Image (tube, rainbow, N blue to C red):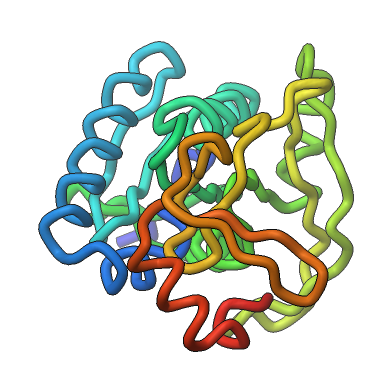
Length: 224
């Protein structure tokens, strides 16, 4: 019997999660963390139809998505990173993606493309949309979007370093005017923050006094 030579269809696979989720859980407890995850998942699900996206699965606080068009994937990634959870007390979100073929098995997808998308997501910072340069090349001209080089990076369990870029909205920084609590990674309005501390000539703002106290006891733990 001849082998089936049909190649799996290519798509952009996106991983999105709440940055610093472990620290957030430790600082605010399981119940608040679970509520944030539920809000995050609901907010992302509401965005998917407009971008032709489908949710493949959730993994803790992370979502795995599939979008056929890489341009739509970039725009959705920016929407997820900057718009679905915003304002004082919102966690930061990071997004990574890669475009290519993957094998479908019982509603899930496996393969090198999915593995690389997950690794790229893990390399992203809070509020960042990170992708391989070859994926960006498939969506080179998106109105209002720029690509910033992040250089060639070695990713865990990926043989060769990958050239990465960040998708950035032109002239529209995320969480404008908000600080990031270094303990739990939540956005903090400096005018509404529960605490403020100076350390090494820098000022840090905190969403709760508990976070401020944790930072005061062990500031070195929260220095990136």
